[in-house]
Amino acid sequence: MESATDMASPFSLFRQYQKVLIAVFGVGLMIAFLVEGSLLNILSGGGGGPSSSSGSASSAVSFKGGSLTDEQLLRMHRSDLLADEFVERVKAEAQ
Image 1: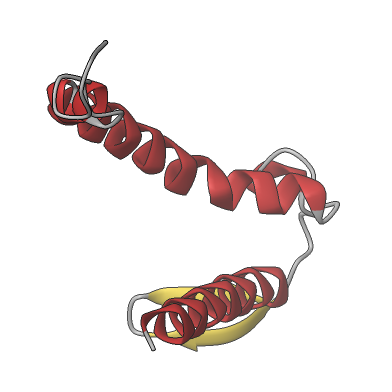
Image 2: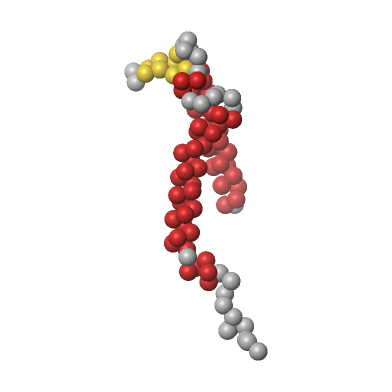
């Protein structure tokens, strides 16, 4: 009969492959953040990219570096709200 000390830890497999798992999840997160903007645009009915907006879109804001349309401002606002919500959830979990 085996004693409790002879049994392998259930986390030994995770410890053995932790570097590989960190690399895989890290790459997965990078891909998720890259795709997130395009996915939000498609899901919100924005179409397939910047060329899908109407050609007569007037700029809502102009500055030295260029100008932004209402659609671009709305997309930036949504991203900001998502980031704020994420930070609030992380802070809540940390407490």
